[in-house]
Length: 179
Image (tube, rainbow, N blue to C red):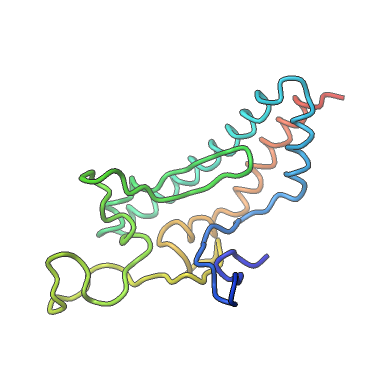
């Protein structure tokens, strides 16, 4: 599957979206549809969201550990990597926090920056100590592409993700459809 960042939108330009799936679950939409047909469909959707949230938080923790191991700005902003889960999907993202909070530089740490003139006090004469911008056309879960620490963590743990998700999903399906 081609990552959303490599798909084209109107006018043949790249979308700039980089939220493609590292692991695509065939039949998830149909499974969710069947959950909605059960008694108490909200409860089952919440359980599926909890499964996604647990997996995302687990992988976010692994990405944080990798970021801390990188040192520098990635280590400083490692706590900004967060896992989110909803009924449709598990996601890992970067939180910048509200204005004035400690994560103000997290985007630069994991997405990188363009050029040398970054920061309010850099006139271009100082060397750029931030990572190079990752771009907007990368594949999800490929080492050497995408956001620093996050994408490589997903790539190295793909088998773990599939196994953990598979076991949790099977347990949920057995409870929801005991027949």
